[in-house]
Amino acid sequence: MLQPKKASESYANMMEMVLPNDTNAIHNLRGGKILHWMDICSAISAGRHAEAVVVTVSVDQVSFENPIKMGDVVQIASKVTRAFSTSMEVKIEVWAENLPTKNKYKCNSAFYTFVALDSNGKPKNIAPILAETDEEKNDFELAQQRREMRLFLAGRIKISEAKELQRILHVKE
Ligand SMILES: CC(C)(COP(=O)(O)OP(=O)(O)OC[C@H]1O[C@@H](n2cnc3c(N)ncnc32)[C@H](O)[C@@H]1OP(=O)(O)O)[C@@H](O)C(=O)NCCC(=O)NCCS
Image (tube, rainbow, N blue to C red; front, side, top):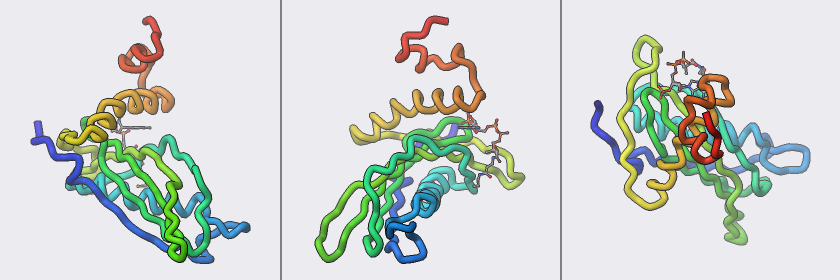
């Protein structure tokens, strides 16, 4: 097995300013644009952890909590929560800031899953995650439930294989 790597080593962040081309008809940042930026930031976290080319395989629990206004600065931060065999889950959080007023507000969060690929484009094993802080440990624990849920919804596993989901939903085999 590969040596565990600290979750914090996968931390990535980026900033963007919302310009007219990024907005919808009511001058707020378009959903597709923010998803694109989140994909880039989280791919950097995943690639950093895997030390490999990564591809997005799933996007989950995207919430749009507040609209982001034109001219505001968007800050995106991401970190790998847990690595499985060849895939890993990345948590992404998004804030925006209005520079004149200094008002900073939380806008989005999501979990993206990436798969690491080898030089032949085949899934490649990656190092486990070492969770250190309380938040990292909590994200690591809950990542198993989220993984089972997304694999179940994607039709890749049966409920009988989703042990953690069975436990929390009190499902009997
Ligand atoms: C990612 C990809 C290579 C996986 O291929 P595959 O034949 O399904 O490979 P496997 O069955 O071995 O699965 C590989 C991993 O992906 C995970 N996976 C596959 N589908 C998934 C899904 N819908 N949600 C979450 N994880 C998924 C598997 O659980 C496995 O993870 P593990 O090794 O940690 O257990 C393939 O699906 C692909 O190329 N998808 C397109 C990716 C892409 O183009 N993304 C957009 C641009 S970056």
